[in-house]
Length: 276
Image (cartoon, one colour):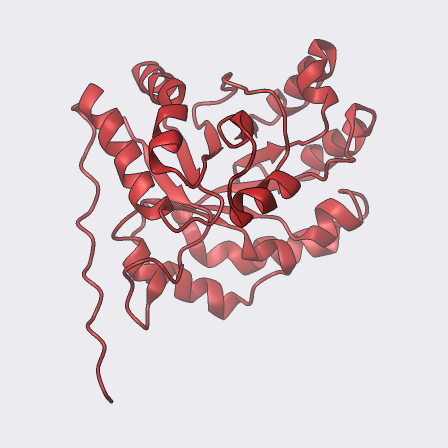
């Protein structure tokens, strides 16, 4: 019975972190992270080796495919780029929880053939998680069912990005306004396809509103755990300043209902600033 929690990044100016080894510090607070930086390019193998060295073997990276694969070429004729990517992230070993295929909003149900062909060719020794943003996948039962069938063939997960709390009322800050412009407004999804569901949840600037909005997700995670699933939940806010604390609070809330969960690690204190 394992629950992993994390954020969209492992460093933030508002977080209590040392000047060096920020990922090591982050891994003492959370047990998973979204690797969003890989969207902008395949990392060097040396960088990934450093990530692995700073995290325990049971830490979970959900590593996003580069945009050249998902957005520019839309999963077509990308064999070389994909092989290079898998080679680069190989040092993560068991920490590589899932290869995250985030597809652009223009990727519609008519493009499912490209996804099916891509997933048919990928190595089966990796786990895959797909995030779609086209409205039709959420509005049409037929489109959703077709996507689920494509994912089921390779035991891949559908990653929902729950923006319901964010869009529950109009933005009240620049950060919320920016999130309103960039985040998808799609229906909430609560169905897990595999033993390893992943949910991305974004709240608001208000900690209280963010916590109030995730009540359904706490119940859902408790249910998944009772079924023997091992979920990973990522907590976002518009500016992510409170995301680190919110991730731990979410875990504590679930643990209150599921006392068998192991405790999170004890956070490593940030080093005090020095003059030299």
